Image 1 (cartoon, protein in one colour):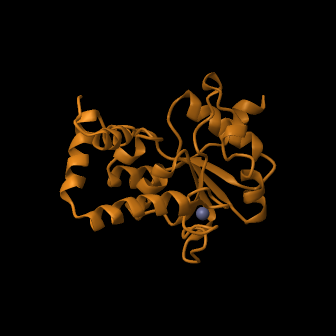
Image 2 (cartoon, rainbow, N blue to C red; image 1 turned 90 degrees about the vertical axis):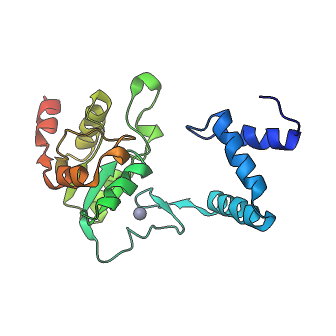
Length: 208
Ligand SMILES: [Zn+2]
């Protein structure tokens, strides 16, 4: 792609860094910005910049938040004895969109994958034990990918929590979670949370 403006070329380059945005789409976006009023473009870039500088990760659940603790964690109307463990923030957004889950979350920030060099220390796992112990959490719902990495992660967490009186459950499988969860329709997702199953077998299998 040959540009007559280095400024436009730079902007196209920046947009094409985003996932799913090729050079052609980036160019379309940049040309649209050129058609907008300067003040509108300032609002646009300002929102992006404020978001990047201002967004925090909740110190309880690692969800995105504008304050130290997120709106879900501080909401007294939520069920604080129930925590849904997910891989990514996108999973939280997908489950929240079902409007069928009223517990809290714990965002791992990924999944155990030794082959990719992702161990427990790369994820938000070490705080789980204390969170369960100190906050009267009685159920942890595992909503992780239905694959070897997901099973490994569930097994690892089950081992970590085995001295605590918490029931571990897993969502009904049949839809892909973690990254793909956002594409599941809300009815399917809500049903798979409602039809969750106990997973004490993981501990039993691993304990031997
Ligand atoms: Zn939170």
